[in-house]
Length: 464
Image (cartoon, rainbow, N blue to C red; front, side, top):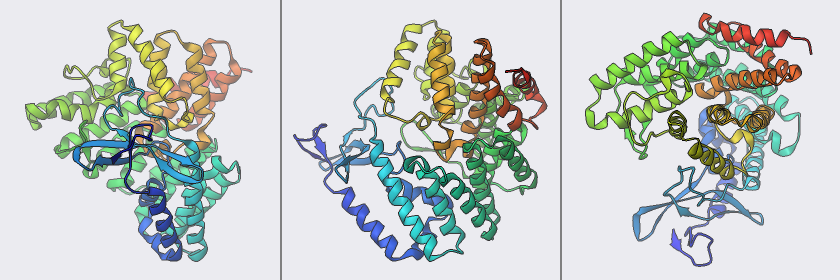
């Protein structure tokens, strides 16, 4: 990064990313067999390379001072992909407004380019599950951009074709998880629940990425104990990042407990199981982690799980820290302390910061918990508008929708919250609209979650 008085930030990147990506795309098109390098989750590397998601940034450092780091969201200058670097400090601080929002037109351009590349691969290798999966992912990402309502159906068809051709069990699970996601995005909740249950009932006792994906599927259908068990199996491959961006070395036993705890927190219970895992995590923190690293490890592993349990007793961290790593915890702590002025200001600034984002570009657990904080301030109308915008935009949601246990669980909880708010307002039609998917998705939910299912069934059964 070099100084440039003409730049809005006073800085510019030394090299042209647009030129580099154009050359790279040309090479991948000329050699379509290169698609094999982007199998499954590796396709996300291409998505990041093309800046086809709105939450991606380009990073850089000063040429004369490597310690000064910069980030930039993509934008379009005519037809050229452009980046304006800003100092990295404050990127994750929602109270600072130094960064312009990502240009969604640039994101859409990246998605269209990605779709064209994947289509070329599928034409060249029509029997390759990797090529078909890449085209399905591109269809799924660009459906909202093109305004073509046939694209989700095309994505579903490609995922199914790829799964039939796939020989590796982990590949088949990943492709099945993608099918599940598309069914949910299309609003086919009964089909999604049936498919998820059949997938979970037949799933092998494997770990790694497959266990993580299946954990999200289990959370989606309210099978909390299974979600926790699958999350525990995924712990072997889990990398724990500290707030400073460094990898933390955490004993496997604590990682297993933390991921299981997150899975149960995502679905909101059962309460007794949550307390057992919380106690286990406390003992492991004390016994397996040195005192100097304990706060950092707790923040990285457990803060989001605490936040997911608000306003329950499990939402209070085990140790007192002046600044939790999760902004949700900071807001929740302010609410407990009666500082509603700061919480309102915080929510307003978060909303301003995201004004150019699509509703689904924010993690669902963030949407749900921010909504609870806003409700505590009495901002019911704003919460209703936010939930309607997010739930109404599910067809454009990211691949995290059912693949991450926190998102999958929070999706159902958001539907419940919207149904409850509609019932309070006497809006039976909307209450039924969102209570019904919960009853379909959680038809086989664990006994500890049956009270919520029964509540939703009552709302769904009310005459319109």
